[in-house]
Amino acid sequence: MLKKFQEALDKRKEAGILRTLKPKSAGIDFYSNDYLGLAGNKELQAQLLLKVQENPTLLSGSSGSRLISGNSTITDETEEYIAEQHQYPAALLFSSGYNANLALFSSLPDRHNTIIIDEQIHRSVHDACRMSHARKLKFRHNDPEDLESILKKQTGPCFIAIESLYSMDGDLAPLREIAALAKKYNAALIVDEAHAFGVFGYGLIEKCELQNDVFASVITYGKALGAHGAAVICDETVKSYLVNFASPFIYTTAAQDFLWMAIKTGYEFLKQKPELPEKLHQNIEIFRNQNIETPSSELSPIQAVLVTDNQQLRSLQKALFDNNFLTYAVYSPTVKEGTERLRICLHSFNTEKEIKQLTGIIKAFL
Ligand SMILES: Cc1ncc(COP(=O)(O)O)c(C=O)c1O
Image (cartoon, rainbow, N blue to C red; front, side):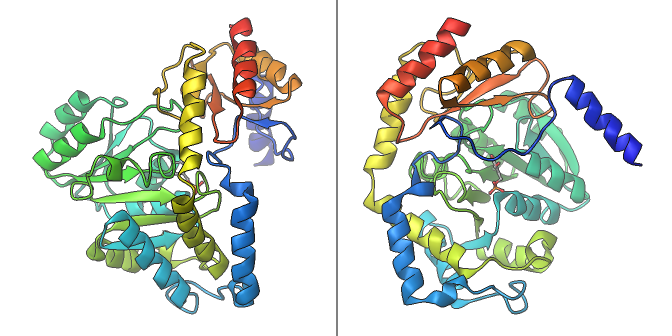
């Protein structure tokens, strides 16, 4: 058994794509999902610290799953608050976005249903599809025509899975067109807003006013909110169904109340600081004005620079690292072979000088 594992690892090592865990490096952050700098925001930390001092039981362990001993008034209140903020009837908290997607797609579709996914959907949805008994079909990335050609052929109930802002290409879904197709073919549209939340207000569903056309959405709190955890936003029936049938919700210990409090405080903080997303969008504009070729949206904090030669990609990342810039090189199998890229994440706290230095090095290299 071990021999088989070692061979697979050796193969990765030979290809130069062995994943290893390293402590966080010091440097200028162009790789984290902390788009608004909230993960280390001192003011937010002070607000949280005050809440913990007033109520130290926030730090207590939850002691069990939500259905046994792990539910609390704070959990319920946070869910109510989130639902209200997103103008949906209900919200259900999870300890991660991975778990939220796993819960949704493993439990809602049954063996008579079809899940139609964008080919670039996050891995958590693929894993959930493997847990469900439904049929999985893929449509071409961000291509409503291809989606419609698949929807036309279906006879049974369908779910459609998309992200509003894709994490690898940094491009936006044609949300209005896809929502219209979901309506036309009576399919349940589920939108993962992991990267859009906090960057575009509460996400693109809210921006496009599509609350009534989206069956459910996933908001994650480990990215722009700088915390951890996630919520499924949906109606009361879907929430109750997940509570009853979704294994990733039922069979796990609830998070500590501190997490739910951090999420609620994060929402309140976002309202106090409209200048943070404004600054982020100014930085995105500065980056885009440097004319680096990219498939990413001009509005996206994620900017992908395709470098399909692995050796060249490694050297580019190293050159940036040597100049104190932290970026993320994405190799296959995280992305399709031939679409390897340098993934740059922009933040509200990056400076114009840093962005220009970074892009200068990239341009000299390409
Ligand atoms: C689109 C998308 N969905 C879901 C997740 C998972 O969220 P979390 O990191 O909270 O588990 C991620 C993060 O990797 C993501 O990029």
